[in-house]
Length: 233
Ligand code: V0D
Image (cartoon, rainbow, N blue to C red; front, side, top):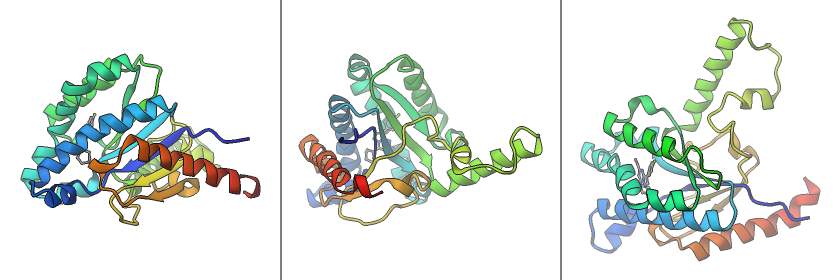
């Protein structure tokens, strides 16, 4: 029996490099990247995925030039102005992982509104990692767990699955597949805990160039790998 793919994550790398290749500023690459979040999310929804998690902004991205960070923080608003209506029609739900506290207030409002507007949608979940870091997620989970132990709300002896309840991804199905674009072979502090049992795929295309057809090919390749190794796990 073939395993259904439920949850795919993407590191959307190569936007700046793509822009440079076209003789455009880095920001033009980010802007084109926004269009592709829409294209791939629609494809993922049509293919029946339950969750698509995309790495929009990492805890390390604050180190970029202030002007670029400012530009990036406007992109959620650009995204929802262009696509919220379509996401509603497709019954797609918006969620976030990461620490919202440090996100600029105007951006945080836009994010909160989109989460609330789509809360009742029962189709695919489009989950944005915003100000997210994998180690940070584990530290926050450990703090919360320690607090629960101190308060007598959790036992000291627990299994991995119980600890997993403290993570930001606890409400989602297990991660099946991570795709990273633009030919880099790194995890970059994304979803560390969930990657323990996920398949990894690295494609050479920059994020703005990844087509829905190529995305579907990645999922098909995943299912072939699962068929080959499934029985031996
Ligand atoms: C730039 C490639 C969509 C990665 C994609 C704040 C780099 C385009 C969003 C977005 C970014 C985030 C949250 C949300 C709705 C949309 C986004 C950022 C960067 C950084 F609720 N694209 N996108 N956010 N890029």
